[in-house]
Length: 222
Image (cartoon, rainbow, N blue to C red):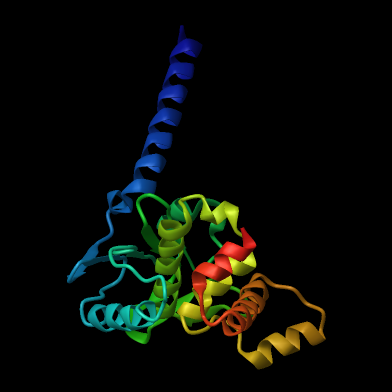
């Protein structure tokens, strides 16, 4: 009887933990972010005080996003800024080395350790370990634009260089400078940020060649 009770307790605890994870993936605010700020139709939740910085960050992100030829409003308007601790690891799951992630369907954006006042986000990498927070938000919002225009399965239907390259192009760059990328290539080193960098260059060249048509770019790869 004792073992049966333990097994039932363990099963119940596992089920509860799974339910919490699934629920928080859809509604990260369930993890009790202590700070919340609303700017227009954008809601930002954070682990650190953010009030003074948020209007500026949202405005910068919007300026970048509006330059996209496939722009439409309403995507990625719930943003969660973490300090890179347990909330980030719970929400990012296997993507904890990323700067941020966005989720299909709910289109929420979860950000790694961030400093809103300095417009920076960090992923802990020794190289290419930081970039602008407003650019990262624009990057993740662009993933939502791609999913909306080309299908919710776009994250699997299109190659990484195309998706990430276009998102970084809209974001105005990535975490690697030209000099940093050249140095990595000279040393024959490969890091995830280099895939994004090469993708952005490739996307920019393709758009220059086809007259700037994003639809043509994604259409020719499909």
